[in-house]
Amino acid sequence: MVAMVGTACAQLPKVTVKDINGKSVSTDTLSNNGRPFIIDFFATWCKPCNRELDAIAEVYDEWVEETGVKIFAVSIDQAQNINKVKPLVDNHGWDYDVLLDPNSDFKRALGIQMIPYTLICDGQGNIVYKHNGYTDGAEEELIEKVRELVKAGE
Picture (cartoon, one colour):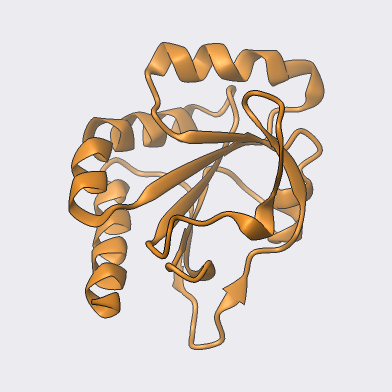
């Protein structure tokens, strides 16, 4: 399912999560210096999630160079599995800002049912695109939407 959000831009809800180092982060303050950013919900046990983040990792440097986009990967692993997140991220070499949502507060606040679930926010932090599930090559659609946002913002 793919949905472009209409002119009523949804803001990110205010939920406190932790970054991978245990520092508290308020989700309504996520930003990328006025540039678009992607929020990707995943779990260590979710194979499609890991495939998606691996696929993006292969092109992430190029994306950043071209558009300045930033990715926040949000783990919904529960507290007992949270210690598996950092090893997984390190093992895959993911260069994302990783956030931990062990109680699924952020996920629930956004009304997300299934993962992987990807959001694109514009430079002002408005949610402008939502996508759930992953099929090979879906990351191309993601970067296309980011390019459109960057172009629209120029």
